[in-house]
Length: 253
Image (cartoon, rainbow, N blue to C red; front, side, top):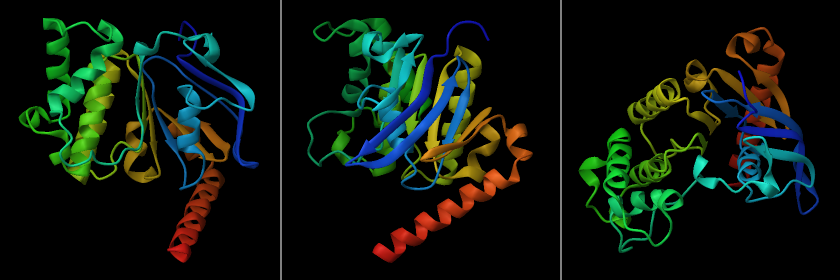
């Protein structure tokens, strides 16, 4: 592929309170790629995404966006980011459509009114995630899964070139999850959108990704599905790590 990667990590490491969370991670994402970032709970996936959008700064290594060092990057409308989110507070005085409209702020400026093209982009985003029937509903009245879809629509409304999604199917049923995956794959094919999709649900998602990154603090594997099929020991490491993290959570509950 021509041109620089849209997102590139080069030997990135990060610590919380002295504990290594991400260690020496290097990977890159090109236009049109659908990358699955897979790992057990506590493997550093969310931290890596926050490093990718500048919410955290690496303590060693570097991050580049669209060929620019993170510290010099200013074209934030080119990036959509959906973190893990909790449902909005009941009674929050904004409708679904108003929340999704804020995704256009980066493209139109903070104090400019929505244009007709802005409104069209907002409606298209709502339609794409199946939330158009709820456009007039208050955001605080939605379920967790519905709220997550609104946040995805908000990111899509900005018409990003790179979309980072941290567990976007949390609280979403199996049918809605497959609809979301098919939508993202279609957007990649139709608009060359690059997607990084964070999850621990490897088997369900594997057929949708054209690149897979397996993370457990360090990067265990980064490549195509076909390449991964030849490295069963890597999959075994990931499964063992996932079982260990689940056991730790259950023991501490």
